[in-house]
Amino acid sequence: MSAVVYDLREVRRARYAVAAVFAVHGAVTGSFATRVPWIQDHAGVSAGQLGLALAFPALGASVAMPLAGRISHRFGARNALRGLTALWTLSLTLPALAPNLLTLCLALFTYGATAGMADVAMNALGVEVENRLGKSIMSGLHGMWSAGALIGSAGGTLAAHLGADARLHHALAAAVLTVLGVAACAWVLDLQPAEDEEPPPRFALPPRSALLVGAVGFCAVFAEGASLDWSAVYLRDQLQASAALAAACTTGFTLTMAIARIAGDKVVDRYGSVRTVRASGVLAVLGGLLIVVSDHPAVAMSGFALMGLGIAVVVPLCFAAAGRSGSNPSLAIAGVATITYTSGLIAPGAIGTLAQATSLMVSFGLVTVLSGGLVAFASVLRAGDRDRPKVSAPDATVPAPRP
View 1 (spheres, rainbow, N blue to C red):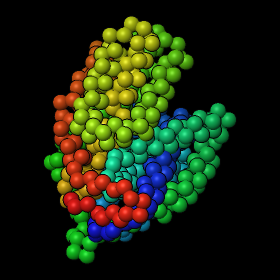
View 2 (cartoon, rainbow, N blue to C red):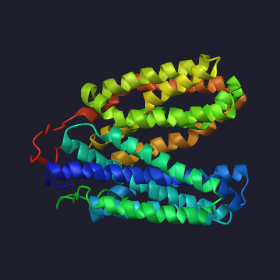
View 3 (spheres, one colour):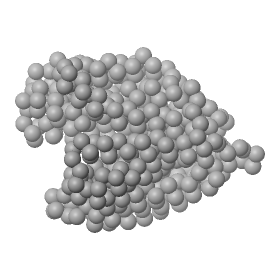
View 4 (cartoon, one colour):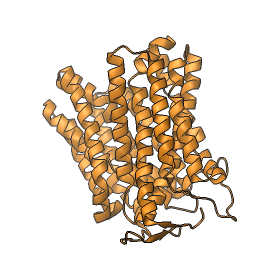
């Protein structure tokens, strides 16, 4: 991208604009997740067929993510994010319209493809804003995604409680979120490629540095997916907790992650990415140990809370490190995003398969071991602390940092 000079006020405004896009992205996810039972009934698919269909969003994202960099190069970062955000929010309407398994798979493939491209574009712009501000913001941006997901899921829960048709619910939600997302994009950084800059390839393997960063993200997202999908089951089956208490554990885990992400930037600014992730890994391991050895629901809930605190900031820092790890930030971010999406896809099934063969306690022993990977491999995120210009004057100009 060209080395444009920005007024600090513009950069601060761009920060809030990107945060709003993150929240909109999360709200789409939350809105969809709460209506999956309605979508299953409408499409007339079995539980096994639904499981197959729900693999298609990750497949679509993995295929489409590498295209985001080329789209940004062709249209500029602002226009690319505006278009991709609109495609993502509007794709929310598709799954509820599907009348059978085939159309549901196609709808979810499109849903995932647009989600992945918008994800890469907004994370790339988030890294650019972070570079110019000279302080960590990626954790807070992902906290806004979590907040948006909570808002979207709350709206979906209300719609489901009222018995609303998901086609109508998602059409209204998509219209509102499209307007909000497109409006927010008006204030993001309008980055344009340099005149002599070669367009990125349509498809290419991510750089080796991004694969290493993605491995750290894999560990964190595996723990997140396992905790989100299996924490309630763990409390119910292993510790004989009530349904209400089991559900409260999952909600508490989600809230813990959101709060930790919103507050995490100050910790990152003070201690740096590497030390923050090492400390996060220690918290996650302690949480995993509490879960595994617990004989009372309160102990397990404390463990899941520590797990949430431990993994909350890791993925945002992985995106930040990927965005600074080479000459093609979008390609590196796409590589990390593909690995983390894959982790989120396989984690619930892997936990279930291992639990069936052994026990849920053993499954969360695996989660604890993977959490230890955050401590062992945190040093690969060192690029996330590199070359952050410090700016303090309110009318200062902020040049694009050197790669």
